Length: 275
Image (cartoon, rainbow, N blue to C red; front, top):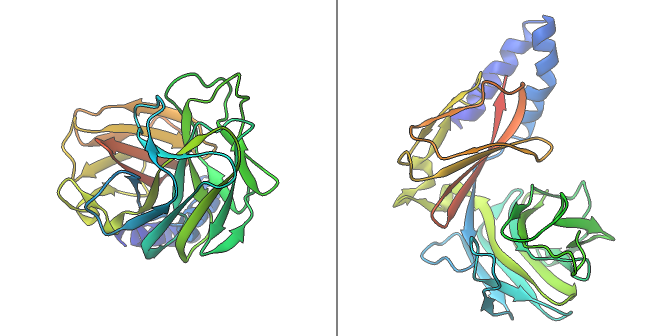
């Protein structure tokens, strides 16, 4: 809520100032306000002790060499499926998939109804490589489904977050349509109901947001987490392990960025704006 009020203040300020500088960034701030994203926290499929989500599946947990996320639910053929049920309706939640090749494909149900995947209805972030995975992409959308970008010969030891771009989501089911095998590692949800460092996610904050370039982190101990910053086209522009509570993106252009913070098996993703 604090971030939202700050964003409204900035928008009001821009509306009263018509210089070229503010005209350039007005559209970015308006987009940020209209799509204000609550911080997203990652919950692995083998995590326990939270009341945020639950899993229903006919798959087993298995480890196939992607150490950062092993073990995962392993899907293959045309009968495997995984359903994540959310305790609270979600906006733009994600499912993390890994290891999909061109022979692997999957369909998605949202709230029990078929959901066609395309560049408008869904999105995916930059892949994280945990082995051999040539090329820029790990997954792509084709014919309303998600499939791998690399052939089985090329291999795809990488994982990505498949985001469903809609609101009011109570459940997501991903079903294997074909393929030798790939994994579902977890889901990212609204942080407000996910415990962080022994407390609720409301104890964590990344502020000020919007900012001129310097963010302060509150709620985590310096040196205990890794930070990566991605631009709005999915390119990771900085990755580091801070030794204090400062995240500095002052050297980058104005615009929208996505900050990922990883500590242990937990992960938080936050949309931020630099003006």
